[in-house]
Length: 273
Image (cartoon, rainbow, N blue to C red; front, side, top):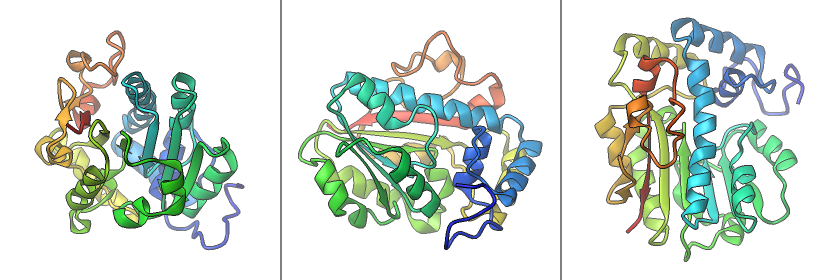
């Protein structure tokens, strides 16, 4: 896609959270409006670029960990534009029999996904709204690719802080939890509101110009997304080096260089008993 020639139905003048994420990663699938707002975000919080890149690395570590637990089915909700360490690339590296479904509601994301992520019948891209779990779970491509009678990993990485409370995120996350078999996993990364409240408030204001709001939450609010799933020790954690005892984090590599950003980045994996 040319960064200045939008496909039909895409308004390049409205900043898009997925394309801003692509810009933070150093990608080229973004428009001037995305870059302009992303630069304002970076001026308010320069650590955003490193935090975004660290989230991509985290996705790779999470998927590797889950494949080592025997998981071969992945439902990646709000997958965003293709980047390094895509879920299917990591999953197939460690589990050649793995199957991956990517879901996103952005037409540009889906067009790129279908063009670049094709791996036969093992990897599919579905356009859908994660806030409507029944539509996602009943989608024929999802049903063909994933057997919900067997364990599946549901990934919500860097997604839920782009969904406001009025859309009932805790409600629809519970629907996904209910739909998967025992032994399944839920992985979440989410920006927290416990640290740097003034700077976080500025980012919230800036995202009012984008197609999605920015909705950081407290650690307790984020913890609720896991319901009665059993969190992998040490539970919901930030990216502080002292918490790198996570089994899915490289103990020799701090998640973030900047400690304030580390305190804002929450992540966890939980298993359905």
